[in-house]
Image (tube, rainbow, N blue to C red; front, side, top):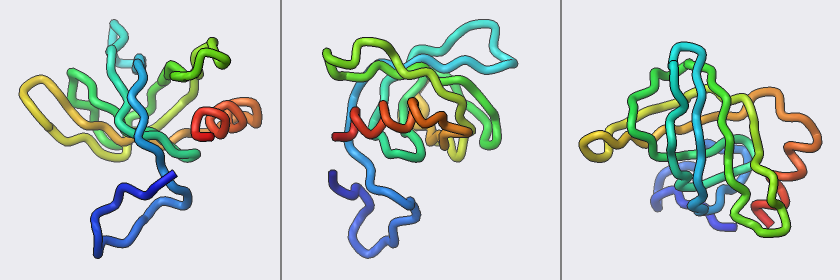
Length: 115
């Protein structure tokens, strides 16, 4: 794993993150539909992804992540909170999510995805 923080900028995360592109789906209580997205990077504490809709910081959601590993066929479904959302292109937003109340099983699955 490597850190993706630019030189000279202190890393704020407790753990390192890994660049990983897998399919994701975001569900919010206020959305009638699920938002298809793809991940940019993943850490033990959260995920950064790109989705087609702006999400407000503080919003709680459920995220389903593909594992990107054939031996881990079931998707990971976790609760998360939006930390930031910035536009990166028309109709594309980079969203940082912090995982909430991970179960031990989910934490182990994330560790396997990172390993």
